[in-house]
Amino acid sequence: MKKIILSVSVLVVLITACAKKSIEEIAPEPAKAPVVVTPNAPVAKTTYDTDIKPIMNAQCVSCHGANAQYPDCSTYTAVKAAMDAANGATILSRMSLATSDGGFMPKGAGSKVQADVDKITKWQTDGLLEK
Figure 1 (spheres, rainbow, N blue to C red):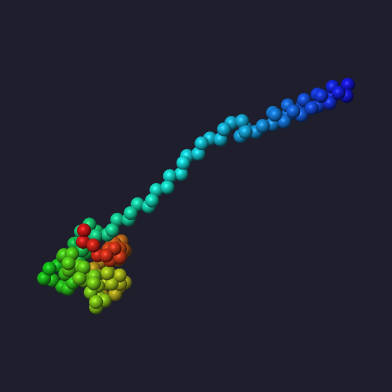
Figure 2: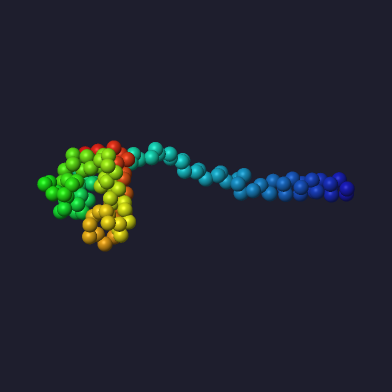
């Protein structure tokens, strides 16, 4: 009788051990999507023709066109020269002043358009490119 009880006990232990396999062991792990690494897209350079000329035409040329007040803001060459001006009164420095400052440009603007200042700053950082 002891042999039967021992045999049944061993059989129960074996069946229980086999039945306790986890679902992970029985079912395969789902495939993970591959990680795709892409290089950063190149950042477009700011150019006079695309980005700065529209600002100059809208904000500056009415007072600072050809044959008008210095600096001339009607051409790439003139705007670039004004950006390189050694006297410190560059287009960017004047646009960066507080609107309450007497030297702030554009005159009559109710508020500073920070996006324009940022674009001109980036243009300068990118090397004052024409096209």
